[in-house]
Image (cartoon, rainbow, N blue to C red):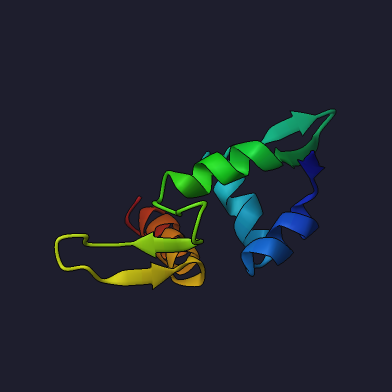
Length: 90
C-alpha cells in the first residue's frame, strides 16, 4: 500500500515538511512516481523496525542492559532528533 506524505506525517505525528526534509536527505525510504513522493507501508514498517520497534508489543527496548523501555512516540522523537542533528551539523 502506498502512503501519501500527509497520511504518513499524520501516522508519525510529524509535520509534512519534516517528511520532505527526510526525503531530501534520504533518511527515509520513499518512491518518486512522476515527481510525486509516496511511501510503501512495508518499507516504512521495516524502517521503523530498524530503530528497534517490536512488532509484538509496539514498544522499543533501549539500553537493554539497563532494562529501560521507550514508547513508539519516543522512538519517533529520537529519530527526528537524529535527523535534525545531521542537518544542523552538516
